[in-house]
Amino acid sequence: MKLLTRLSALTVLFIISACSINVSPTVKTDLENAEISINQTGKRPKNVILMIGDGMGVTQVSSGLYRNKSLHVERITNVGLSKTSSSSDLITDSAAGATAFSIGEKTYNGAIGVDKDGKPKETLLELLGNNGYATGLIATCAITHATPASFFAHQLKRSMENEIAADMVNAPVNLFIGGGKKYFENRVDSKRKPFDNRNITKELEGKGFSFIRSLDELGTTSGKVGYFIADNQPEPILKGRDDILPRSIAPSIRHLQNESDKGFFLVVEGSQIDWGGHNNDSEYIITEMIDFDKAIGKALDFAEKDGNTLIVITADHETGGYSLRSKDGNYNELDGAFTTGGHTGAMVPVFAYGPGSEVFRGIYDNHQIYHKIRQVLGR
Image 1: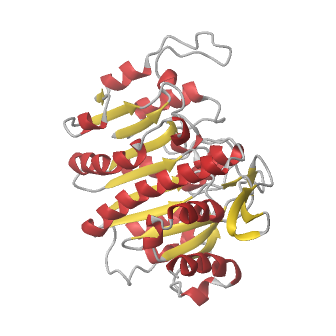
Image 2 (image 1 turned 30 degrees about the vertical axis):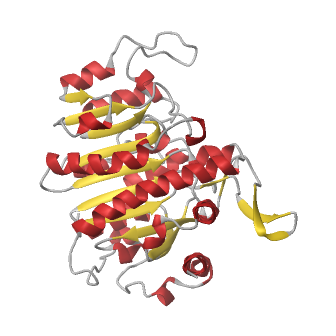
């Protein structure tokens, strides 16, 4: 019954207006100019955890739910839907999708931290980091990949991963965990010729970074920290990647809390849900979805005890045109099916928990998530 209720709630959001689900009347369509009421909670959050399931549509969530019997995301009651198109295309890519979250504007496909005209814009991570918040990035892809890059870098094309890595040197990032070490050391171009002589890892050490080799070291390391979990892209769960994503949540939160009394902003990406969709591989999607949900569970465990943390969980887009059809006409057996090996224009879910989470109900454009976070924070 709980499973059916949660799925029904998501379905109903497609066909009813925002006002019929008790969205505060002070939330306007144009959230850039809106004043958001947080009277239901009576306080503003101190910390924000933004969790992005790359390529995670409603069906991806459903597939994990049916396999696992339940998901931690079911603990959340404030649910909305995000419209994902970019400024250049009805169907977005991850770069434009994540940049909409990070700068509060729709931009063109491929853009990293720049607006539709290619102009660098201050990201939410930079805004908060430069105002005393501790900031962190965790991903199961290269840290230079489109989604995490969009929060700390400013490049015209997502393919410019060497340049993206160099942007980390001046970014107000306190902690990052992900793959992509090859873009920081012994850098080569697309033809595997030397790109330059820079060692970005050494430059980051000169800026106060320490590089660790295990999560255990994070508990005994202060200051800025980097942790490369792969030279290029981490392996999928199906090929041996362990539970590094959910295991990283609690120690990363503790580290960021130790770095600032003002609060923290943490971005967490379940990167490879998307890659399962591109591969039209249900098992790939399901295992990555469950891994991401375990990370959600760790974040919720903290937020429930803390009482001062807003968690926003969403996706940049849906991948694969994924559906769960009956297998050979048997309505008690599900079979994953796909309409494309690319992205789709489907709306994606938004789940929110904690102070101010009620303003994430309803249907709205993806870039408004940025404005909702800022206004709930009072910034």
